[in-house]
Length: 258
Image (cartoon, rainbow, N blue to C red; front, side, top):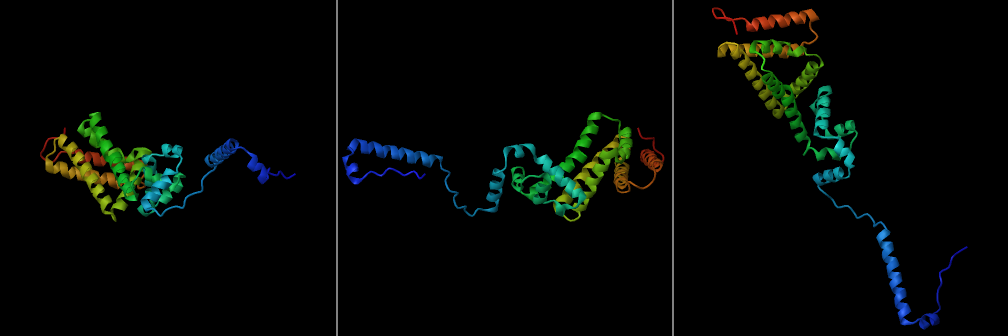
C-alpha cells in the first residue's frame, strides 16, 4: 500500500489563517534542521600535503591503545634484531612496522625519521655495552686486579655475552661503511681502553705498560667474541688463565702488581 502525502487544494491553502501558516513553516524548518544535524556530511576532497604531514596524518589515525603499547625502546630492539639478522640496509620503517604489526605512521610518534632511529640504535648500544658496564664495576668497588680477571672472563658470561657479541659484530660491520656509526664505535673503543688502562694503573703499572696491557686485553676480549667456537671448554679456560697471568705479571726488575 502506497502512502500518499496530503496535498491541499489551492482554495484550502487560501483559507488557512496567516498565524497557522507561519507555525507550519516554523515546524518544517525545525524538522529540516534536525535532519541536517543527524546526517553525516560528505567527505571533503583531500588536499595535496607534504610527506611529513601525510606521515603525521597516518599516525593520527592510529588507535591510542597501539601508541601506548609500543615505545621507542620497542622500535630500537626490533631494529637491532634486524641489524643482527640481516644488515643496516634492512632496517627500514616499513619492514619494522610489519614486524611489530603496527601501521607505518605510528613510527613517527617516536622518531623524526629513519636517521633518527639509526642514531638512537647506536646510542643505545653505547650505553648498554659500555657506559652501564663501567658504571656497574665502579659501583661494586672491585679491586683492580680482580677486575682485570673479571674482564678476561667477560666474553664467556653466557647468553648475555653471546647477545652482546652479536650486536657488537653487527655494529662494527655497519661502521665500516657509515661515518656516523664509525664515530660512535671509535668513541666506544676509546672509552673502554681508557677504563682498562685505569685498572692497570691502579695495579701499580706505569703509564706506558698500562696502556700496552690495556690494548692487549681489549684485543683478547674482541678475539674471543670472534672465535667463540674455537677450542673446548678446557681450552677456553686455559686461555683465560694464561692471559690473566700474562697481563698481571710484573715487568722484569719491578715489584709484582698490587
